[in-house]
Length: 423
Image 1: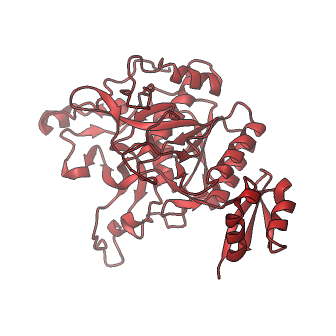
Image 2 (image 1 turned 90 degrees about the horizontal axis):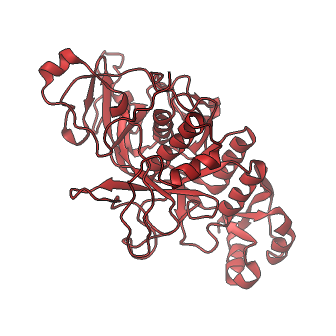
């Protein structure tokens, strides 16, 4: 019979060990949080579950948390001076020059955004904008995506790119807690988050979580958020609201942890429908616990290079059975909306000389994009929508190529670029 990995507060350990009849096993600390993780026999865990009146909030399973994305990313490549978008089989109709990240809009200076997710890989556009130790890099070679879209190792890279699109001068500190498949244990997430908090980050991005389909599934995250604010009372925790797929009717709002916790800024995904109304994306969670929304559909950001396209010793590229990635992709999910909000908090802190909590107040008041909010639904109030800075805002027309390439790429629904520029 297999063992079960549990988490318990240190002060509750004596009572839990009594409930386990001494079969508590070995307990190890989780970061600096006062949480302990340990393996207990399955039969002891079953006794705890059966005696729930005694168990109460003392112990929780070390749940698997998943990144909040939908489907697989579509490839988008940047080669030389042209940018080709292969997602959905549609090319970009005009050639564009890809400027460096540090262009004329440089906001976020002095702000640190922590990202707990999958790991990093080196990328020329991200260079100089992120911090990561060797253990926080994905365990692949320079062009590593060995299993194609079956691995989601580029999720953390994608988020880092989105944050830096919003706040080009900010620093992104990445801690790898999720495996390449996009999931990891709550204890690993807690350790990574607490590590970043002690390093002095201003904003913590958690584009991950779990649904409330097990008793006390949110207890570990609740304690984590409490401990994060003990370390830094002004730390802002931004979390993805999750994508529909929880227990029960998937068309109804479902709580997603840690986003649904008090003290966490929960972000869902919005879109503009054909009638011009701004509504929730059909796959986005929604509920009274969500604070903000941001676009989250087909966003473009940094991604891995696919080794199947790298010439082998014979000079020929490996045969690919699926889409190929050249360092860029388009992806959808509340994960991405959360990263946009994290970056916009960093931008507002710098541009308007605000603290992180003040920047949140600014966004929640709808001042970043006046007049844009989600349409209210039954039991789901309207929330402000945060306008992203995206690649369309910084891509520069190549006049010679545009003259021969036909129609220009239309602006996304969030309109023209912001006029605010930092010298």
